[in-house]
View 1 (tube, rainbow, N blue to C red):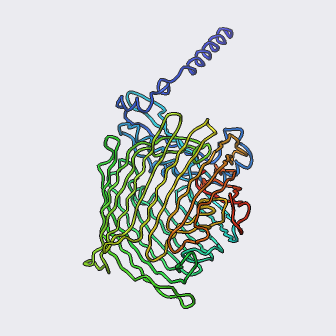
View 2 (tube, helix red, strand yellow):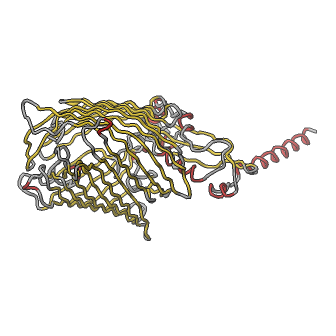
View 3 (cartoon, rainbow, N blue to C red):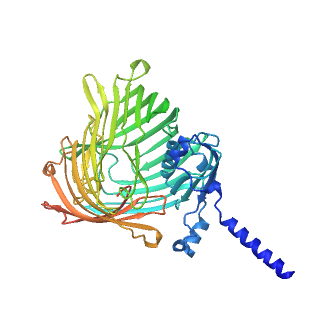
Length: 549
């Protein structure tokens, strides 16, 4: 009897094991998002899986330091992730909305990764899993740069996901011996408080405050933007104040300073029909207020611009083509990125009216357009241009124009040829804006602000290398060899002896802090000026963090 019972038990165990190995029809290989949409699938349960900074299931990340980091870190709350979804239970599945949600989630600095996938399908109802992995959201940064006789330094402390809520709180300081067109040399302290998920989860509130050696600025903005291509309405309100010194130049030499006090406010509302046949068109109406007052400084006076007050109603139009391409190893290392290949254009026109209290009638305008192009052989071209300014009494003023073209040619997963051409021009009658080249503004083989002017052209060639080296599962490593050539000239800022073409060659190391919300890349560059002039060092060493490769 016992033998028979044992045999029955053994058979039963084997049968249960065999059943356990049979795939659940709900979790069998599922159709793609596009196939589910074509079949008319409806979204069922949505499961949020918010993961910590380090994956302890991966032996390479399961160590004492990473376990401690996970324990100290507060994970992003599921409600914060759910509030950013562009779909909900009961909706028809639309592949575009799911892909755009992924794109939006990955744009959050406090997320290292974001994926949305179907996990079960039953009678036309599909369950989705939204999985995210956090970055270390407490940021600390330091900067030291010394070149061409000028020294700049800085430090900042910033939490971009306070207690897992997405709240931003930060403070930073900067100090420089370099004299600029505004503020001169000295130190700056900046404070920031922002919450992007207020009210309905899509309304952002942001407060900024900066103090300088010679003034201060403050701004407060409340905005519910067009947070998705299919968003039907938007609105924003902002106020700001600024008080600081500005410097006037003649032939690149300071001819005195004046104090500028500015106040501003902006209110607008917009509407859209949403995403229609792959295109989004948006319309906005608004009103801006600006007040500028100028005063002499007793120790170094300069000619003063005229005070002015403007009340400017405006209308804005935008059009966006839904064409985004996911790529890796372009402006980052080993992280998903998106290139906007579709047409994006915008136009805003306003007219200040004396009947509303303006001191003069001025037409203000701003326009921009960009487009991406893909070619055979893994080649991509991104082109953009923009123009803004004012027009009154038959003359233009406060004009800013820029144009750029960036070309990428893939040569294997870790090898990329990058070409960039940019041109800029400015025209401000009060001489408060100029363009510069040298250091971090281009021409890496020359000191900061080496050339100044109201015109600028810069061409760069880079051979970029992206490696699979991932030291300590924290840092991604890349490198570049580069050539720069450019020129800044024209206007009262121009330093006549330097108003010609300059070029340099160099090489650099790129270190991406992959696990930090900062998401910046440390650039360590050695650049050598070609045909250098007296007083210019034979090389420039620059160490600084930047967004992008």
